[in-house]
Image (tube, rainbow, N blue to C red):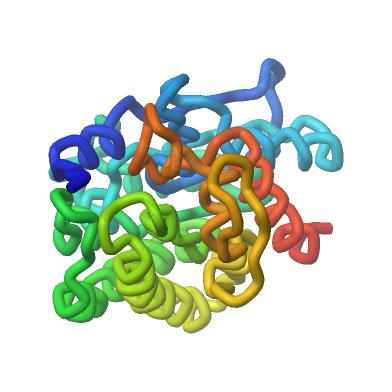
Length: 285
């Protein structure tokens, strides 16, 4: 039986240091990005890359002259470590990732064009996922969700207070654990069971974003995570539900060498970036 250790999963999600990028010219316009390893751009074969954040920046700097990027995202970040800095794999002079973001906003008041954030998945991964089997504990996820929601609300309030009127876009996660489908004994049932837990997480995140008036880049829709009905043929795998196929095509999860790694590959990061682009397009001048 295929076994995945919790230590291996955590090591994949907790590598690296804050991704910091900046334009080559001094400007008065900035894109501030916060989040976990997805915002940091982690890939298992390349470490930290430009990921989706770099692609979003590349798109909008063509529309916003002199747009610079400040990416304070941290692989392995949770809502708790983002606020306190405790158990974070990254170190910030201001204290925590949120402190760094708020400090940056204060130092560049009136010069920040927009903010993106993805956070929350690691809260449940570290507490509620059995790394030996890949099974989520749904009861644990349900118990943890109110705490995640409270912390996310605090994060969004801090950002909005530090940068009133600046557009913020959050993220609804795709479900990488659909990749268990057909890959391990009982993988079909396991993928569906885990998907129900991902829906619990996403519902909680979306409710907080909605209450804060923060639009959401819906990666679950982009990856068609809920669609077990439509099928497509994938080379080497045969016919798969489209949601499973998209995870296998756009993340590392189904690969032999990096099996169980949930991060997008370059195709996946492009799709994540495009989803943010579409949401931001309606918010910016």
